[in-house]
Amino acid sequence: MTGNRPEDHVPNVPAWSAVDLPARTAFSIILVWGQVDSAVVEELKTELTSGADNPDHLERARLVNTNDGVTVFLGYWTDPESQTRWCRHSQALRRPGVMLETAIIPSDRWETLHSTPEKTPGVRNLLAADITDVHEYWGAARDRIPASAQEDLASEPAEPLPGNLCLIRSGQVWAHCGEAERRLYFTEVEPNLAAGIAFLAEHPETGCISSRFLREQTIDGEDLESTSFVGWFRDLKALEDWSKSHPTHLAIFDSFLSMVADLGFEIELRLWHEVAAIPAGGVHVAGTVASPLAGAS
Image 1 (cartoon, helix red, strand yellow):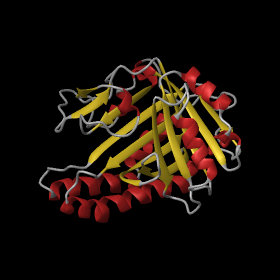
Image 2 (spheres, rainbow, N blue to C red):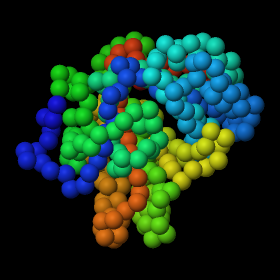
Image 3 (cartoon, rainbow, N blue to C red):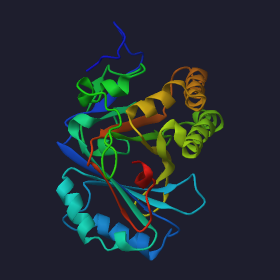
Image 4 (cartoon, rainbow, N blue to C red):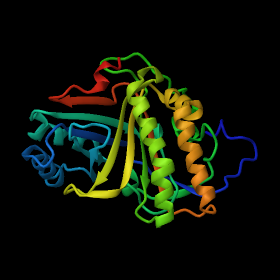
């Protein structure tokens, strides 16, 4: 399970990974175009926060890399059958301008990593996290996915969508940062992050199918001091290739390391991510707006 780890590797800083993942988790991304503060958003919010089949954990965001005013809800269900029932009963999913993308993720098909033991957005809200030494080297994310010990997780032809589509959600929380760290982050790091996300959105030849930059919000729609990148890739290798060698990702990485050095290696920025390689039949799209995943096959 640690085939990429260099011999005698010891991380320089601690990191934590979620443990005891459910046998299968349903993660749904629901987007509403041009309906900010509309009746559709309120209807969705009500449906997602009440009833027996509402998500075990729910978040809200707005899409940053668009001018269309897109509201996003992100729901995590530990019982995929509950998510299926919620979809069946939802009226908001049938409203104009709504898109749903759902990943049904087996426990051995995903991993998380966190720079802090404190809870951050994402599935971590439902799970405990243990310290891990499987990080701080290229290929560590793959090593943290148990199924990678037996499979290469490469894209596989399947209908209606290919097998092993890769989903990443990677976040940044600056709520605890002081003035100097905020200044460095927003002048040196965040512009490179936004540029990398924009590059992926415009260059499908990288294997990126969808690239979204989210500003996290409260469930009522107030901005939080937190963002996340949500990306769909052809497979895990496409994500790894961009992360390892593309200039846009190296710019993000190098500017972050420079910020850390400027701050004397003491930072409060909280970083986290979750990555899944989803088997054939595990990704579903619905709604009145066509998902970019529809062209992935």
